[in-house]
Amino acid sequence: MIALAGAAAADPQPKQPEQPEQPKQHDDDLVDVAGVISDAVIDIRYATADNFTGKELYPVARCKLRRAVAVRLARAAKALRAQDRRLVLWDCYRPISIQKELWKRVPDPRYVADPKVGSKHGRGAAVDVALADKDGKLVALPTKFDDFSEAAHRDRALAGDAGAEARRLEKALTDVGFQPLPTEWWHFDAPDSANYALSDEPL
Image (tube, one colour):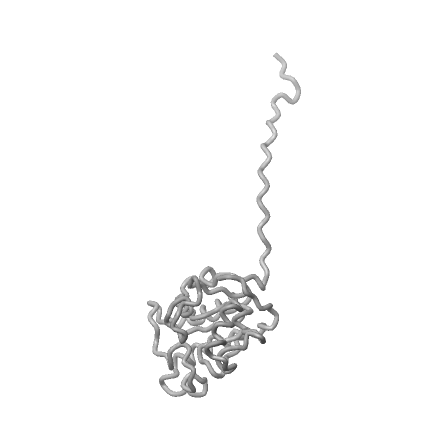
């Protein structure tokens, strides 16, 4: 029997399903920092009563930042990891509605931004951070979080032996471009914070 021409040709391959298009990533996306810095110690104080208001203000303990800010912070975390230190995240993105609540309690722009002006936390471009050892235990720090006294000012908090860890923290963050707040040793702003819009997106 003579085979018909082309009878032995292979069957056409089944068409592969199209892969769904991945959403584009943008520098100003608000992202969960836990997915960027896997060893960060998440200790969001406004999600607990352990803050100066004595009440829970956030519904969830989540640190969100603009994507570019989170990537910048990850570079600082890498440098600290080499020194057996881990970043402790006390506060990150803060919705405007929460900023208004804080301003009611401490209407002092040295410590809390007037919500009419807007906080860099509200832009997802500021962090309140501390340091822990590699096991996640807080190291010796100059003051507690939200210490609204001169003891928390950098010129005092970073001085002497008691300021050693705060100096370590400041160096790691300023080396990657963060700008320290003079009145709070734990607070750092991204250098491009003005590029991001204020937001009231829920946590």
